Image (cartoon, rainbow, N blue to C red; front, side):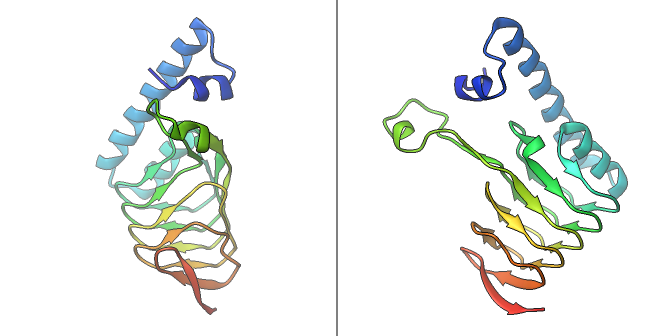
Length: 165
């Protein structure tokens, strides 16, 4: 069953709300598994839209990407952006187990905004609260924890600006 905090955030903490959220999660999970087998880029982008992600026009999304299933509506991808295989984009952070760390790290939900004409190479991780400016390039394997200015190349863990484009 989904976390109590996530249900409260969505205003679905009633019995009917839990059932609705369970159905939504099953739908999103099914779409994510189906997307793995879809060879057509346009279909994958459309399926991410169906799951709740705001996907712009002419967006390429590679195979085996993992976008936040609890808060997909918090992810916005601009037009003409390319996202490589095996990228992860999360719009929230929380500890799913009962631990004293939950008090230190409560549920945090922040939007992820990816500009237009951005190139995100394979195996990039983007965490919640990040904005990536237009025409930025994110190098393979980078972990983006801070905003990325427009027309810059970032790389590394954590990602740092390498050069202006």
